[in-house]
Length: 400
View: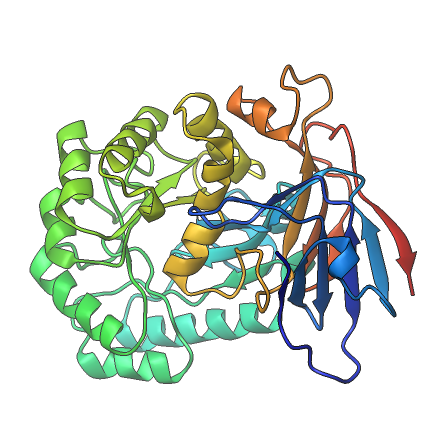
């Protein structure tokens, strides 16, 4: 069935993608769509369906997918940006661009904690968060959407501080527990103030990750009631299995699994969430840059881990990094449906993979090859320099 949205008339560019072999929707309830064509105008999807039903005339850009797979651009739910595409944690330039070559088109900051001299007084931390929000709102490294400006809460903050932050455009809190607020009672009060003004919260889970952080266990997490249980599999050090199980069973908040964490604990979380029938709670991040470096293929590696070792259907695993995150984070990307942002990643099985197609190869634990990324209807990268080479790659056949 074709899905259409009214297009705004005017000068908006029109993108047509044809010959899609496999269309992954990002929707965990219907992960594969019966469609081979997408039309986008002005950076938003206007049509998803069969080519015979599509208006493909007067397109400024036509991409022939050549039978490869297309999915929503991947979302990294947990990054720590600082200044543009540079990270002082590893003194590395171009880390965001490298992640784009891993299929990531959107990133969510869990706090700009690696900024040297990060202010921890209330006036300073508010000013820093607003500055980060403004910087990444005005600058997209390689086109990647970085939702930043995530202050780390400190003792002494009052409700008015959260009201001020929200009024200035801040929509995220950095990881609760990375600052001086480490007790559940204080955290709960501040998280509630943040939620009142439309600011979403994430809490650190597990052992300390940077100087100044500390152990945040299940009791603090449940008391704080943050919106996202950040890196429930540890960043790096995970909680005991019994505590992870308790967190999955005792609240309905987001369960974030990260590459920069304990893989065995990630698989345990997956099993518990699956047993509860709550896979829609699982979202994926890298927690990069970190002491272990930058992981440009971190999201793809998590998908391959959860499918290849965890046994979840690969088309569902892709939803963890797309639609699940989009809905939980209230983003307009992450799903292939009319009205959503035209953010896509083209993939195929890696050359010489034992799998017969993309999904079979991922189910075997192989990484897919990325052939192209599109953000807001604009091609941002071609064959990935980081993934193994895709068997089939898309081609721009008409570009004006």
